[in-house]
Amino acid sequence: MLALAIAGCGGGAQQPSGKRIRAAGFSFEAPSGWRVTRTPTSVAARDGEAIVSVTTFRLARRYRPGLWPEVVPELDRVAQQLAARVHGRVRTSETRTIAGRKARVYDIARTGEDERIGFVLDGRREFQLYCRGAAGACDTLLGSFSLSA
Image 1 (tube, rainbow, N blue to C red):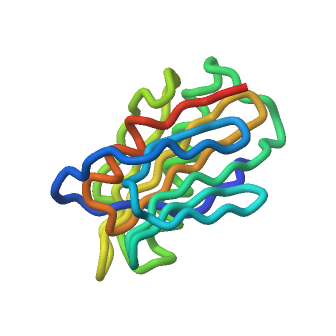
Image 2 (cartoon, rainbow, N blue to C red; image 1 turned 30 degrees about the horizontal axis):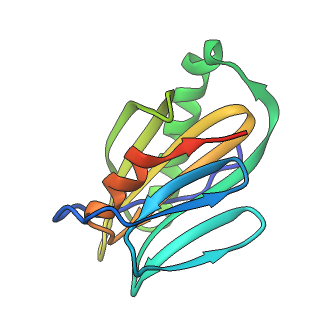
């Protein structure tokens, strides 16, 4: 089973690109002036309550693109469970291309600020892209996320 947790972001005005944030195996853009924090498995940029982050997990089994049809229902199920846990609901779900790979993205509607979570799988790694209350910074995160060696 994939190690998964909730993430998301609200809509709103487009935010200008800012600084490139680099970590082991990935990078993404965040608005300049946002405070960056790091843990061994994640990087987050915050401005007040707004957040964009990327968390990495090691998969129990190697992901291959041919497994995508099996992965989607599992991600959908987990997204439903995570939304219920925060007293929300999955408003939209879609398969998108992020970092040149098929990825699954969910918008979660909840009281307060909406959230968005994206899952990118690469070999033995899962990247969880999360945003909440981040307006255009969420689109920037999803559009600028890239993998590195």
